[in-house]
Image 1 (spheres, chains in turn purple, orange):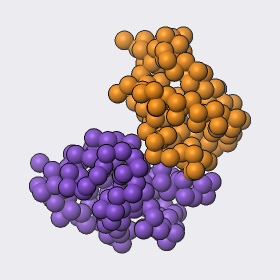
Image 2: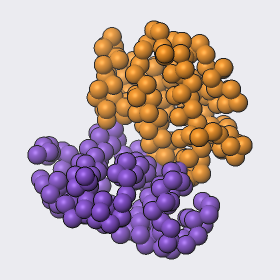
Image 3: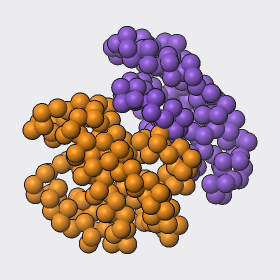
Length: 147
Length: 143
């Protein structure tokens, strides 16, 4: 089981309490599709992804970014058993969506960068450490049902 | 994954704008790396103080950032331009190349935090590609 210090829990809660899902979600997913263009392979039915401008103004991508970001809520609410919290989502990503789990880390890195851009100097090294630990646990849980 | 003309322009323009803050960027990136990825501390056992913003970290952050800015100037021939730095890393420092990726990530986080308006997705991809090429040039002489 993952051990969380009181400080880490507090940092994670704080970041989520300030999180504007409707802004960060779209920014995170669109940045991932622009910075790592091969991730577009999973979004064939999402309309125009031809260039950065198209991706940034694509309403389907924006909506999906919000959905994906809310996927983190279950980890926030079950920090002591993130592993099992993601069993079904892991199966979904493996069996139905066929997403290479390497992509989870790419998206996580983009999320960290979007949050850093929003929080500026308030996103201290200690906060970054706790946040990246949280994301790596989620990423690991999402990869567990792959076989 | 090579740098397009647009990528190079984005990199040169962006670092032209932010290069004046090299000391601050380097210090923040290195401090973050040490805190977020504690395994990197193993390369600095000779330092007195590994805490964020310490004199050792500040000094070395500037050294590293000066190297990055130098690489920007040599963007058209990174392997040739960074030859002596590559030899330094290969034969003297022997930093495991996996750590270049770690430091690059910390640099991106710092750049996003300090320059949110300038660090657009297109600048982000260009800088990410550039840093990957720098890392490759630095590991050129490893084996």
